Length: 263
Length: 178
Image 1 (cartoon, rainbow over the protein chains, first blue to last red):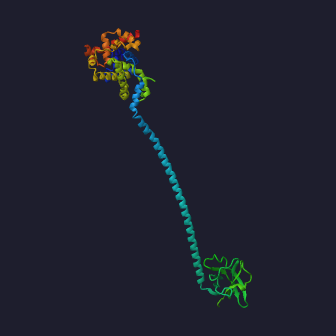
Image 2: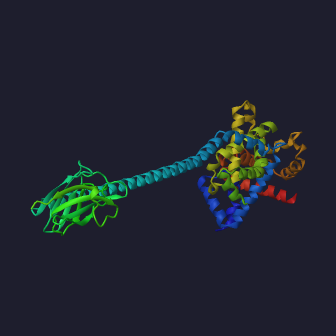
Image 3: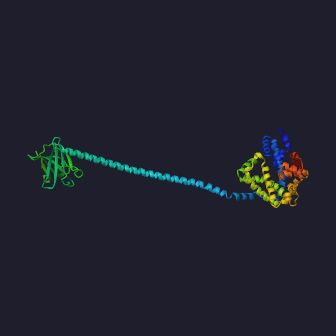
């Protein structure tokens, strides 16, 4: 392109004056980017007009401060609103974080409470299960005992109260075949501290006592029935009160109950 | 920072950039206004309003369509001419095309603070033909289109462009020699 002719046409001067069409303006701006001499010409024409216009300026030009004040006056209504809107956002964020943290702590505590509550419940369940087991065992024992007492081989011996304690009574269930002896001692008073009942097997002619065993843990036996082993050819059974641990020979003065085996 | 970046930041409502542009162009723009209204106080008032308008309309400037100064120039002379037309300046409105920017130089109190520039301008302008003074005044300060200039000066439309070119070149020559 002949930039010199383009410049000489006077289009640059009209461009600076703002008297070109939009299309022409775009064209000049495009050439200005492409050709440095056109750009230079634009700046020189502009500087000429700047110089002329500067010379026509009033005695004093208002300072920018006056403009700034007007701008602030205009935007004074806008800026605080922006500040407000930008200042509540972080607070909302923090508030949300605090609420969230409180929520987490609350839920954590709730969970802890539920866990400990569950532990208590589990312990109770275990305890109840243990009780059921014990009751079942106790029932089984009782059933077993009842079966044993009902056995056709069992001989029942009534033991009557003697002079030391006439109101006392007891029953002996003796399975001669299996050598089992059950003593129902519910009719005996609780033995004093340091003393225990001792069961004796007696043969009558001559009177010979043989120790069968002690009614141990008398107070803690829940059904009052004691299981002993008796392989003697007993003719009678007697129960005496002896020092804890038992004696070699019965103290007949402390004979509580006595009964003979019916033949 | 170059002008382009300054203008970009100004368009992003950076008041610091705006201040710099103001320092660069305020004297010229106030001068354009003064050349139209030919009243110191009024031109200062209009000049402030013009820069407020410039701030508000910053989005509407498009660098691909013209020089930033040309954009300012257009806003300024429109504001000044509107002012003359709206207020009780009807007589002056009638004289609008008759008063040239050089007329300000003839005012007795004008050159007190600005003696250098004024006397320089006198020197630059003195050598110009009356037709040159008129065409520069109408195209740059009064915002006349080429057609309006041709009608006002009673010259063929095709000669406005080249005559203006010659007059500006003459002015540049005068400035160079002073």
